[in-house]
Length: 227
Image (cartoon, rainbow, N blue to C red; front, side, top):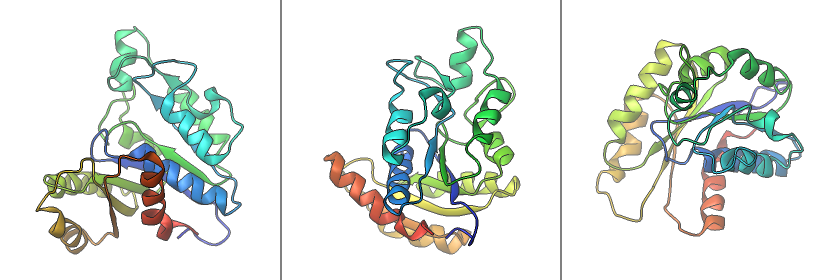
């Protein structure tokens, strides 16, 4: 839970791409909005944009928050190529301006906010900074979204160790199922992660093809984080 008198702010990152970061971010924002807390979503870097004027993840965050911010305010760095933002920028001969990112955050940091990263912790954002550098600079606690099944023990442990090395607090790990396939490792993963790393583990969020039902499942799993 957030400390009394302080805004609810969290950085949503993942052990990999495609693990459910945007769905988790939207669920948190909608819960905060439903509670009358007027949150803002911030997705400073987004690649793989079919339209630079309509970045899908950033617009999803804005809609979940019920926000009237402009696209540039929600997502200052947008790229068409579906690769790491720093790589996409390099191929264009550009360098994303770190100061633009920080200035965009300063306009939001006084209120309730959910910040979503791009991919995992060591995805390059420019020639000098990875996602983990942004987390450390913003000094936000983390929600780490991870796969529920086989492989998550290693991926999650490595991510938690990297965050601990930078003294980044982790509010929780959220396990999410990405497919309908059964995975026999899943029954032990939550217990082992909690026991070995001393961090709350939420979920697993079930795989549900229907978008509304999946959104509702993310909301149920993440409700304990709310103030």
